[in-house]
Image (tube, rainbow, N blue to C red; front, side, top):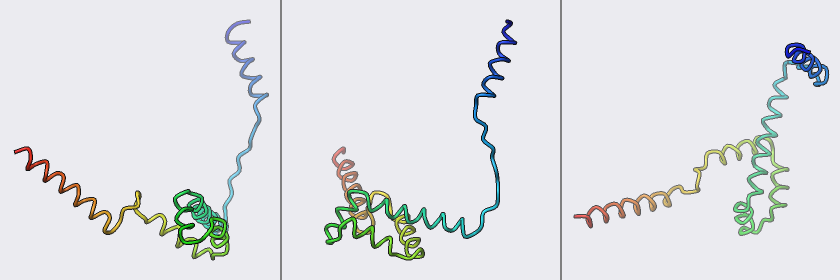
Length: 119
Protein backbone atom coordinates (compact mmCIF):
# COMPACT_ATOMS: atom_id res chain seq x y z
CA UNK A 1 0.00 0.00 0.00
CA UNK A 2 1.42 3.33 -0.96
CA UNK A 3 1.66 6.25 1.42
CA UNK A 4 -1.07 8.13 -0.45
CA UNK A 5 -3.56 5.22 -0.28
CA UNK A 6 -2.77 4.66 3.41
CA UNK A 7 -3.29 8.36 4.19
CA UNK A 8 -6.60 8.35 2.31
CA UNK A 9 -7.74 5.23 4.17
CA UNK A 10 -6.86 6.78 7.52
CA UNK A 11 -8.69 10.01 6.65
CA UNK A 12 -11.79 8.14 5.47
CA UNK A 13 -11.75 6.07 8.65
CA UNK A 14 -11.41 9.16 10.84
CA UNK A 15 -14.25 10.90 9.01
CA UNK A 16 -16.52 7.91 9.55
CA UNK A 17 -15.47 7.56 13.20
CA UNK A 18 -15.68 11.23 14.20
CA UNK A 19 -19.07 12.37 15.43
CA UNK A 20 -20.87 14.81 13.23
CA UNK A 21 -22.41 17.82 14.87
CA UNK A 22 -24.80 19.86 12.92
CA UNK A 23 -24.69 23.55 13.68
CA UNK A 24 -27.86 25.52 13.66
CA UNK A 25 -28.34 29.23 13.82
CA UNK A 26 -31.53 30.94 14.75
CA UNK A 27 -32.74 34.26 16.01
CA UNK A 28 -33.21 34.74 19.71
CA UNK A 29 -35.80 36.99 21.20
CA UNK A 30 -35.09 40.12 23.22
CA UNK A 31 -36.55 38.40 26.27
CA UNK A 32 -34.06 35.55 25.94
CA UNK A 33 -31.13 37.95 25.60
CA UNK A 34 -32.21 40.06 28.58
CA UNK A 35 -32.85 36.94 30.67
CA UNK A 36 -29.29 35.79 29.98
CA UNK A 37 -27.95 39.19 31.04
CA UNK A 38 -30.03 39.14 34.23
CA UNK A 39 -28.78 35.65 35.09
CA UNK A 40 -25.21 36.79 34.47
CA UNK A 41 -25.64 39.80 36.79
CA UNK A 42 -27.19 37.66 39.53
CA UNK A 43 -24.39 35.09 39.20
CA UNK A 44 -21.79 37.88 39.43
CA UNK A 45 -23.32 39.26 42.64
CA UNK A 46 -23.65 35.79 44.17
CA UNK A 47 -20.05 35.06 43.18
CA UNK A 48 -18.94 38.22 44.96
CA UNK A 49 -20.67 37.01 48.13
CA UNK A 50 -18.69 33.77 48.03
CA UNK A 51 -15.36 35.59 48.35
CA UNK A 52 -13.79 35.27 51.80
CA UNK A 53 -13.22 39.02 52.23
CA UNK A 54 -16.84 39.83 51.38
CA UNK A 55 -18.08 37.08 53.70
CA UNK A 56 -15.91 38.49 56.49
CA UNK A 57 -17.26 42.00 55.94
CA UNK A 58 -20.84 40.71 55.98
CA UNK A 59 -20.22 38.82 59.21
CA UNK A 60 -18.84 42.02 60.75
CA UNK A 61 -22.28 43.53 60.07
CA UNK A 62 -24.01 40.49 61.57
CA UNK A 63 -25.14 38.94 58.26
CA UNK A 64 -24.32 35.34 57.43
CA UNK A 65 -23.35 34.52 53.84
CA UNK A 66 -26.50 32.42 53.48
CA UNK A 67 -28.69 35.34 54.57
CA UNK A 68 -26.97 37.57 52.02
CA UNK A 69 -27.56 35.00 49.27
CA UNK A 70 -31.21 34.75 50.26
CA UNK A 71 -31.53 38.53 50.10
CA UNK A 72 -29.94 38.65 46.65
CA UNK A 73 -32.35 35.93 45.50
CA UNK A 74 -35.25 38.05 46.74
CA UNK A 75 -34.04 41.21 44.94
CA UNK A 76 -35.65 42.37 41.73
CA UNK A 77 -33.78 42.06 38.46
CA UNK A 78 -33.34 45.83 38.23
CA UNK A 79 -31.82 45.98 41.73
CA UNK A 80 -29.42 43.14 40.95
CA UNK A 81 -28.37 44.85 37.70
CA UNK A 82 -27.75 48.12 39.57
CA UNK A 83 -25.74 46.32 42.26
CA UNK A 84 -23.66 44.47 39.66
CA UNK A 85 -22.97 47.81 37.95
CA UNK A 86 -21.82 49.31 41.24
CA UNK A 87 -19.53 46.33 41.84
CA UNK A 88 -18.00 46.80 38.39
CA UNK A 89 -17.43 50.53 38.99
CA UNK A 90 -15.49 50.04 42.24
CA UNK A 91 -11.75 50.57 41.96
CA UNK A 92 -9.59 47.47 41.93
CA UNK A 93 -7.59 47.11 45.10
CA UNK A 94 -10.17 48.85 47.23
CA UNK A 95 -8.42 52.22 47.65
CA UNK A 96 -10.67 55.16 47.08
CA UNK A 97 -11.24 58.57 48.56
CA UNK A 98 -8.99 59.54 51.47
CA UNK A 99 -7.09 56.24 51.38
CA UNK A 100 -5.71 56.85 47.92
CA UNK A 101 -4.77 60.44 48.84
CA UNK A 102 -2.88 59.14 51.86
CA UNK A 103 -0.96 56.62 49.73
CA UNK A 104 -0.07 59.31 47.18
CA UNK A 105 1.09 61.65 49.98
CA UNK A 106 3.32 58.93 51.44
CA UNK A 107 4.85 58.15 48.04
CA UNK A 108 5.53 61.85 47.35
CA UNK A 109 7.03 62.23 50.84
CA UNK A 110 9.37 59.29 50.33
CA UNK A 111 10.49 60.61 46.94
CA UNK A 112 11.06 64.11 48.41
CA UNK A 113 13.00 62.64 51.36
CA UNK A 114 15.18 60.51 49.04
CA UNK A 115 15.84 63.47 46.70
CA UNK A 116 16.90 65.82 49.52
CA UNK A 117 19.03 63.18 51.23
CA UNK A 118 20.97 62.43 48.02
CA UNK A 119 22.37 66.00 47.90
